[in-house]
Image 1 (cartoon, rainbow, N blue to C red):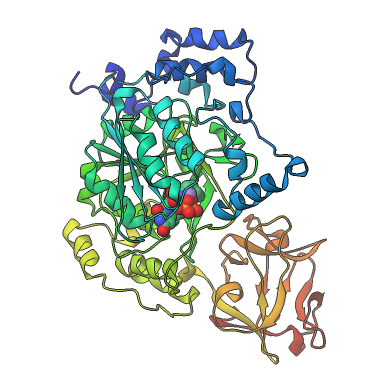
Image 2: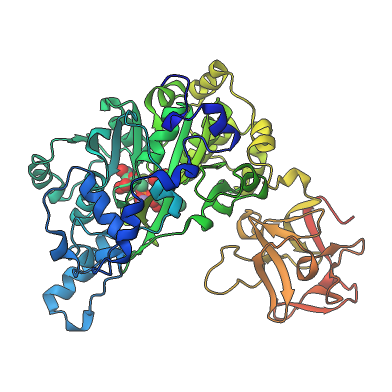
Length: 572
Ligand code: LR7
Ligand code: MN
């Protein structure tokens, strides 16, 4: 049906409704309505019937005894537990080693089925959508470095078990010079039974960026899907991605990334209503955000409609192979880890593409608290990668990042080829990106003052972490180090003192960093001409105690212990 949108609906109608590729109105005609009804009568309560039905419909069933697995550990994505007190000494050693090697609970993973069932809590409309038969074929590329056996295999099986057979051209396992034994002979042996799986290997440790490029170099499908090596694809994950790319080959799509708990392996399925989009801050760190109102409106407030996202987390996305080639794949000068996610996000948008998240597509990922593998070379690779990105893509805005790293760029290699790529493709500039794609981002140029906030007499600066941990972080004072970091603060026109979405907030609990709420009140501050930092809501001033170097909020006296200077910009 040339000229038509998917499902034979004229494209313009689908588009007008903001529903490219999605026709919920047809829901009551859809056959799997019966499946939904069947759900009610399902006696196997811990598993969603749709999951099972879809798995079976997926073709590649591997003839596994599903019923037998229902009660197994981790089934249905439920949390598993290892009673460490009842482990023998040997078992306990294996348990500890699993954590040490992987920074997740490998011992538990090894006891969960490689084909475990998962919850399916997609927006109900997602289950009703039908996709064209001729979606493009995907090459799935998984890069790995010393991944745990059960976790890597479960990643692979979750793809095969939950994808229509004809849509997976191949799964390419791209090995970044792993030295664990199981990832060599045993892996080759195991994969002999899975003809779609190919293994390629680096000759030395390259990092995830060049390892993805190795996978790309042997891929033959028309769509590439990059995945981390510790994921599980949920029911229906594939079609929504391919559908968007079929519709428009310049669209790159990510699934919703659900959390697989690093300790319990619980699959925490996030509901469609809480889908988030990607952003970044000026330390060039990826961040998550609620969907902005304008974008919600564009989607007619429908949670299952693909949502435009300024950036992606990096590890899980689908992209047309020719488009990936056209926009310059990845920057092969980036090492080990980091930076490539924002770099490709900016490049997709600035060079003619669109980046979206498909709320009907769900893939779980094991989020861990630290990196378990070595980071060869003791230069700061993330900084190096970020500087490469900033030099090529950020134009005049790069100074805001450089401010944060104390203008110490370090060695970052040659970026002339990447600059030439940008000129050749005639990409938009970064200002265009900020205006059109990410207008919500605060640009420090708009700040009234920025940099460290130093006491007028003593070399002490206001200092705090802005990550939101268990408890909000207090604002303290610390010897001024002049490196930016935790002493970098901006004062906005809206009278906030902030960095990266964390704002000075003085309330009953003290002077703490809270997420900025944009409504003044306890987060409103004035840097007055007498250099005091005044808090109208409490009628107090930020005060340095000279003997203890503690920060308190006191009645304003205007004395030196209440006088502060920013190193850029001043009071108004
Ligand atoms: O040297 C390396 N060589 C590799 O092959 C380092 C890593 N890798 C592999 C590794 O085995 C894994 O499969 O690369 C993949 C990513 O490494 P992780 O899992 O240690 O990274 P992460 O999940 O903490 O990091 C996120 O940001 C990275 C920035 O470079 C990459 O873009 C990751 O793919 C990305 N992961 C995700 O987007 C999943 C969702 C997380 C979020 C938010
Ligand atoms: Mn990961």
